[in-house]
Length: 304
Ligand code: ADP
Image (tube, rainbow, N blue to C red; front, side, top):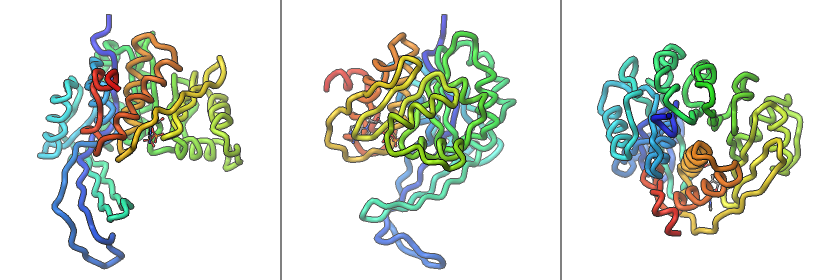
């Protein structure tokens, strides 16, 4: 019935990374390492993560008509993502300029570029993709009005998954569509703080999950890094055990977790089962460097 297990609507960025001894102060110039260019952006990352697991995946995104756009298309296609929904032009490809010092601290400037030009009209024009997709996932590196249009475009019976990153207050219409809303600790605090006018909800993730659920989502997942995750729905709050690994680079962990969870939910798993599988995927991803390069195949997840 569905052509795609997952439609990802979101950002595609080129990450330009330079290692430096010291990040420059105002007015200062420092010399750094050779430039490394990586495909990134939360939308592109989720699509690659899902496709590598074997999900039939499509990406709805906007890139520039430039070399970084072609790099992003190549990485999507290499992973097996259907790029029929990737729109080209309107602005340069989104870029993240990243300087990293020896302690691992970084400074990042993002130019959203074409991501900022993914419009509600683009979403409406992709109605065929929405009708062909069992699950739709989104993040917040595209305009919020575009995410609102995504929610309005969902086909009857399809499921919506949102990772509100970077976090910002969400309209009730978007919150009500989430099944689940997936947040890490930082995102949970921002969304709760904003919605509650800054009132404290304490330090217990179980309480955050309950208060977030009361804001309207059908279900909530709070990811807790090396401590695993929590799932919350009308049936209650459940812990998902962490998978013990030696982490070397947590970049992209949340993106691979979200992709795996969305795929498993579409395949009929319960929220707790899907989150347990997603935790295994995230755990493999953190044992490898990079974002898209670190995402495992289903066989690699089974093999652990
Ligand atoms: P984000 O990348 O969005 O900040 P988290 O750091 O919470 O999100 O990671 C997402 C998920 O990836 C976690 O819920 C967990 O399942 C897995 N994960 C992340 N870091 C580790 C780790 N150090 N060890 C094992 N699993 C991890």
